[in-house]
Length: 133
Image (cartoon, rainbow, N blue to C red; front, side, top):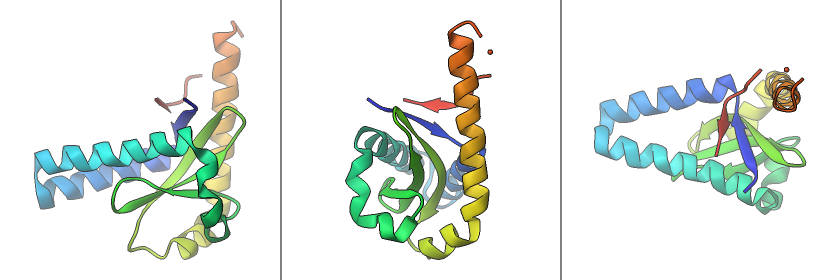
């Protein structure tokens, strides 16, 4: 399995999604809903090349379904992906990516540096980003 990492933006988006779902659908449905989103992250990490047909919509990022109603926006690296945003299917995803492109790139680059630092630390050299598995 390829690892996946979530930016701070994604953690905030997931908190918001979970809160809205709890209010609208209750706890049991929210647990299933959130599990489906995380399963989508795992699928993106395990099959990051599956998204070729959507690349024209999300360039320079990649786009895969995350649950029933959301899409994960991510960047692929050699041995992991970094998920930079989660958008609802009802959103104009291309517009959101265009609007956030430079911020997403900055956040993903920052996460990439954290991952490098973590790797160095694990090798006895230096931070620990959040990692999903």
